[in-house]
Amino acid sequence: MRLIRRKIGGLRASVGTALLLAALAGCSLLTQKNAETVSTVGGYGASPAAAPPTVTDPRSLGRGDAPIVIIEYSDYQCPFCGQFHVNVLPSLQREYIDTGKVRLIFRDLPLDMHRESVPAAIVAHCAGEQGKFWAMNEALFANQRELGAALYEQLAHDLKLDTDKFNACARSPLTRKKVQAGVQEAKRYDMNGTPSFILGRSVQGKIEIHRTARGLVNFETFAREIDALLAITPSLEDAAIAG
Image (cartoon, rainbow, N blue to C red; front, top):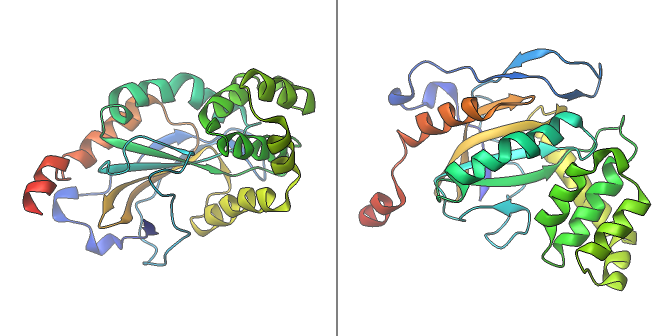
């Protein structure tokens, strides 16, 4: 898959007037305060971003052929990101991800204001190398106030990770580069605060962007936008028949 920007003029007529996806702004690079913002419809040309993961990537949830894709740009020390994972993601997973309608892809966007955001992201990557990314991901968000070396060591033990492999991964410059790759991808889409989201359709191996949001989005807003997008998206069964 590649990310593409879809020109506003090229949106299908059935989409109609662009719906604004309202959200409370989350952690900001500049102000560190809350502010209200709205999303934009992808309309910045067709420049591709870094390729999203393969079906087996440990940082995605849901079917690889799900018709709808959400990309989350997140920071483990951002309280609004924690709220999303505790209060919103469980409902999204139950209603849309586990039912095969949506695939969620996690991307790192550690902010400079947060001292532990990069170390925590590295820890999550290293847990992912041993098949425990999401277990570590949710544990980090659940323990945001305790982020630090002692917590990382305890969580690695609790998740029964291979200590030598885990420590080697955490020290590797390559792991830090993987974290920074998420930052560079976010910049391509003007994502400079967390959490930020891209909502789009999977079309011929690309993610066709329909909505972006900067800030904490509640489940009801996600559900409304996902359902609207599903209404103009062929089902997996219909696609198989057409193929």
